Amino acid sequence: MESLPTVILKPGEADRIVAGHPWVYHTSILRMTAQAGDGEMVQVKDHRQRLIGVGFFNSKSKIHVRVLAPERVEVDQAFFEERIRAALAVRKRHLPSATSFRVVNAESDFLSGLIVDKYEDVLVLQISALGMEKRKDKIVAALRKIFSPRVIVERSDMASRKFEGMVEANGFLHGELNGPVTVNLNGLKFETDLVGGHKTGMYLDQQTSYQAVAQFAKGAQVLDCFSFLGGFGLHAARAGAAHVHLLDQSAGAVAASLRNAEANGLKSHVAAEAVNVFDWLKANTLVKPHERVVPRFDLVVLDPPSFTRNRASVPDALRGYKEIHLRALKLLRPGGALATFCCSHHVDSGTFQDVILSAAFDCRRVLRRVATYSQSLDHPVIPMIPETEYLKGFVFEVVR
Ligand code: SAH
Image 1: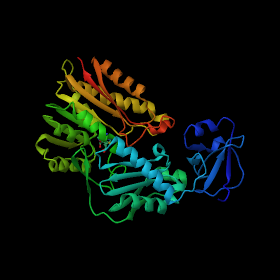
Image 2: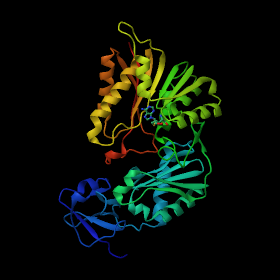
Image 3: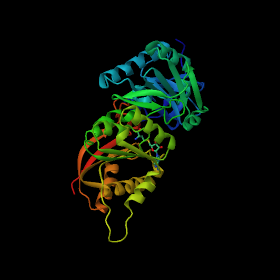
Image 4: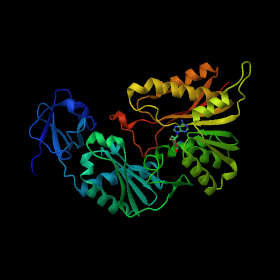
């Protein structure tokens, strides 16, 4: 093997990498022994010249090196095959009956910069690191060998690509799709636009929680806020909800969720509105002085998008979370349940719960916490890599 350019770390910077975190920031680097090409392999050593790993170099990114392995490896098709098969084995173990799931979740699967989702016989690829981009043909070859997919879609249309010096990319890497794909989650069918929809198509990270929250739905009047394709609402309807009301500001998502209700034989129990949830909750909790809001729901689901992009916007985000919780609690009957989620990495579960309790205080509700959730196990949490943990959820019952 030819020798690789060496990145030498400043004293004290190696431990985090040795512990399993793959990002070497440019500020951690003492010096380099030779100039490395962007997207090429380098070796990383501590300031005493001990090898701590090899990975992709990119001078354009704040993350100068994305470490792939603690020892020297050849990053060829066989490497990707081995890593992807290892990731797949984790999903088979933890989600044995799922047919659609995230196969590779970047850092969570020791493939920083690569996401692969499986939607039945279609794979969706998302690449956010130049080193992966340069080896896309090897990744595609490995995926075709393991899965024999009908289609491979590329959805590398994230603004973050510019931080790696790449432009956004969209298209087909194998085969072609014309129209939506029917995705099966927990035995329910969801019509999904894998070419132009949200993220890579669906929020697969909620697959387990859809089932879990549905346990609170039997006989209930359900309000599903930020419903997208109806994930929570349709699981609730199948579990025996009396009625489910879906709210999402996207008219396209609302129309798709109603088609999904029909396709699953749940149409008579489901209604949907294309509205801004903040406006709807406000309009439905506004009363004249001396009047009370009449609570009319037994289960309210709040699964908003992340209100934060960075640490600086956390205070604004918390105000947004508090507002929707306050109004949702006013609409809940005593004994009813609030299922609430926060997908921002910058808001930890303690802070999130504090906001909910502060909303409960303001409307004089007492809550009992009856469930705590995280992302589905196809989005593995590696505690040594804090960025891999982002989704948290709770169910609170209204005691009074
Ligand atoms: N619960 C969904 C995921 C929600 S993602 C699921 O499990 O699939 C967030 C959704 O909120 C998106 O569908 C987006 O269109 C919608 N959205 C974002 N801001 C909104 C707002 N202010 N009012 C209503 N919907 C909103």
